[in-house]
Image 1 (cartoon, rainbow, N blue to C red):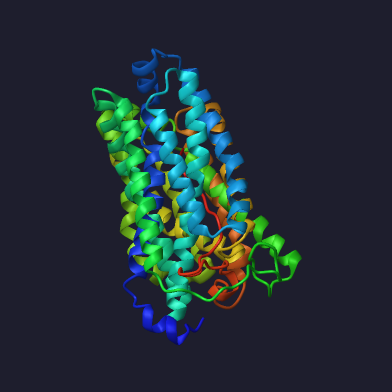
Image 2 (spheres, rainbow, N blue to C red):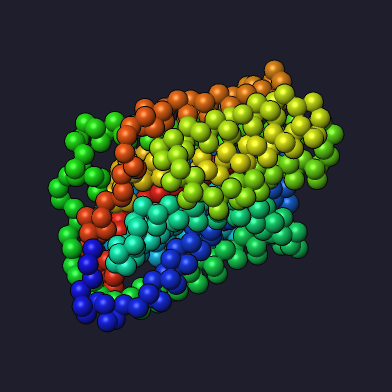
Length: 443
C-alpha cells in the first residue's frame, strides 16, 4: 500500500510504535487476567464463600469456557460492522465494569455468573492479536519492507508474550490470594482495563487520517484470499482448524497431572513447579532463531518442530529419574516455540487477518480444549505418565496433517495486502483491521 503524500507528512513512524505496544499490552492483560487465578480457585472459593467442593471449581471453569465459546463468534460479527478499536475499547470498558462488580459478588453463584460475563467481555481483547499482526504488515508495506518477515516477527512476539505471561500470571494469582482481602485484587484488574482503553484511544487519535475504504465485498467471505478458489479456501480453513485443535489438545492434555507425575520421581512441589515451566524457557531460547528456521525450512518447519516436541514428550514418558525428565522437558520446549510460531503462521496464511474466518477457526480450536481434561483424567487412571504419550501422538498427527502443505513447492504465501483487509476507517484515525483471534493453550 502506498501512503498518500499527506499521510506521509503527518505519519512519522513514532505514532505506530505505541499502538503496537498497546496491542501487545492488551494481549498480555487478557492472558494474565484469564489465567492468573486458575490454579487458586479452590482456595479462593473456600476463603470467600466457604465452598470447598472440588466440583464447584470444575463447574465454574466449564461455565466460563462455554460462555467464551459463545462470545467468540459474536465479537467476530461485531468486528465486521464496527472498527476494530471500538470493539477492543468496548471490551475493555465492559470488562472493567464487570471486574468491579466481581469483587463484591455476595455468593459463589453470583461470582460464577459475573465471571462468565467477564469472560465474554474479555473475548474482545483478543481482537488485538490479529490487529497487531495486521499493523506490523501494514507498516512493512508502507516502508517497502518484507511483509512475510514482518508477520513472522509479529507472531514471534506474541509467542514470547504467551510464555512470559504464563509465569507472570502465576505470580499475580499468588499475590492476589495473599492479600488480606482477595476481592481487592480481583477488582484491581478494572484499573488496568480502563488505563489501556484510555491509552489506546489517545494513540489512535495521534495516528494520521486514512482514506475511507469499504470492507471487502469480493473474494472469500470475511477477508480471505480472493485469489484462492472457494473450495480450496474451505480446505485450507479445515486443515488449519484440525492442526490447531490437535496442537492445542496436545499441550493441554499433558498439563493437569504433570506436577504429580514429577513429584513421583522425587522433584518435590517446588521442583515440580519449575519443571512445569521448563518448556517455556526452552521455547524462549529458540524463538530468536524463528526467522532463520522459517527461511531454512519454509512449510517444513511445522512438521519438523512438532516431531521434535513429540520426541520430548516420549522422552518424558520414558524417564525414570529427574535428569531424564529435565532433558525431556527441555527437548519439548525446543520444539514448542518453533511449532507455536509455525501453527500461528499457518493460521494467518489460511484465514488472513480480517473477517469471520479467523473467528470460526479459533472457535473450533477452543472447543477442542474441552476434551483435554477428560482424556487426561481417563489416562491417569491407568498411569500418571500416559497423558504424555497422548500428547506425543497428537503432535505426530499435527506433523502428518502439515506434510501435504510441506511438500508443496515455492515459498509460503504472504498475507493479503493491507489494502485488501482494511476496514472502513474513522475520520481522523488510521484504517484498522477487523478480525478476531483467541489463544488459550491452557485454561
